[in-house]
Amino acid sequence: MQKNIRNFSIIAHIDHGKSTLADRLISECGAISDREMSSQVMDTMDIEKERGITIKAQSVRLNYEENGKKYIINLIDTPGHVDFSYEVSKSLGSCEGVLLVVDASQGVEAQTIANVYVALEHDLEIIPVINKIDLPAADPQKVKNEIEHTIGLDCEHVLEVSAKSGIGIKELLHAIIEKIPPPKGDKNKPLKALIYDSWFDNYLGALALVRVFDGELKKGKEILVVSTKKKHEVLSLKYPHPLKQIKTDTIKTGEIGIVVLGLKNIGDVKVGDMITDAKNPTKDIIQGLQEAKAFVFAGIYPIETDKFEDLRDALDKLKLNDSSISYEPETSAALGFGFRIGFLGLLHMEVVKERLEREFNIDLIATAPTVVYRVKKTDGQTVQIQNPSELPPVNKIEKVYEPYVKATIVTPTEFLGNIITLLNNKRGIQKNMDYITTDRVLLEYLLPMNEIIMDFYDKLKSSTKGYASFDYEPVGYEEGDLVKLDVRVANEIVDALSIIVPKDKAMSKGRELVKAMKELVPRQLFEVAIQASIGNKIIARETVKSMGKNVTAKCYGGDITRKRKLLEKQKAGKKRMKSIGKVQLPQEAFLSVLKID
Image (cartoon, rainbow, N blue to C red):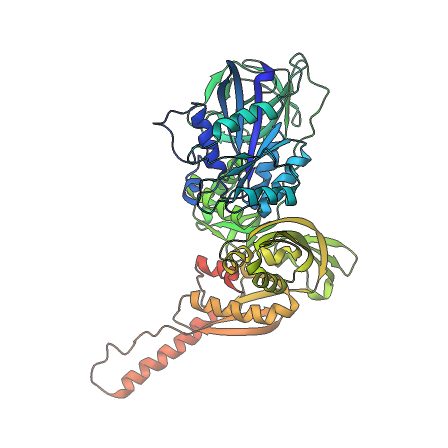
């Protein structure tokens, strides 16, 4: 029955215990036996288990009985890291309520606040839950005050639980059934369902995870995908489950399920698309999900150049599973054929590269990440630049605009000085400073996106012993005094190493970059000059000394002129090599750009 269905998500800052709470709810509802249960059971990728983070939002259907009534609970566990906030927003579009989980020892963090705003945009019922109350450092009362002060939620009847030991889980399930409204929708209306996730299965083809808003999905029925206007037959239907998907013949109004259409063409099921009845289509179109905007761009190239087509196929399949990536082919004089890929952040970039290497068995090389710049040329034309090598010559540039973000940082007050110094070094502009409690402060800053994509998060964590939390959202473009810094190896510009930097930092960045490159470029039989330049002006240089080859080793005894003759011959040969020598750069050289301060 529709009134006994509950659809909800779990949202929280990273490491506040979402996945553990999901495990506990699954176990409490008896969906998985104790023998089959493992920690982070909803996290299905190896990389998620290894790093201890959730990357993909995962759904599970649970059966629960209370006071003799049977309920169906559809739970979606979402990621907590700022880079995967797109996963959170698309999951919330198919829920009626959320559990807002806050760590009892760490309190409200930056991502907690960001997730609440997303939930409010979707007009969802928010249930605050304080987790980890059995920790020695837990202070639930202080966290209640923080939630009331920072977020404005009433915490009089807040739920206090420990997902690890199971304290308060029964009360939490009762609150889910009492407070989260059942799904609205009319089972007699034409079918209306939203695709909110999809992935590729080697045996079944492209699969779609849908939420049915009106009508019902039946096996064997012909459906219409609204954006492509293509008709398909429903081959089979399943309910999501972390271990074994449960087959069904119908997915009713308000329910969540997996649709198998036997599609080999990956573009036919897009996240945010709508499914309706082919014979009796609905007039009521769902406002689809917004496309994710990429903030960070990097070039990804196969190490073996003949693997370019394999990389294209791999990206097509991964795009189905992670709809937030965007990509287009590009070529580099140094690296050959590859793709310029747009990511939501640095962690997202790392994860996508690792998934491509693991799941599709391709060895890849990545260039330093950059952001999208807008360039106003002297002829009045405005162009967007994703790759520094696309920047027009200096005499054709009138203005360069760079993207800015609004950064929210929550930190203990003892580290305030360190953070303000760091933000000032990163060209930050303070907008707001609010003391949540006497010993925790919330900072709002405007920062150039370029400054945070390199190593900002690592520096923030190290300067605050790991206690600060960070979240950001884009706010538009501002004019900047920027130049392109090129790196030349043996007099050749390596286009994959070009970066765009503020003019006043160009000299120091150039020096540091050539210094870092000197350590990484392998020694050759000839001297290799590594230079940093702005346009044609060389601003820094380091030299990799040549490798000595002992050409006189075969001379034993005899006249000194024999040795001298060989050494002269070697000298002439080295001169010739220098003019035609090619240098092989290792993968680390392309990432040395990240290491410069």
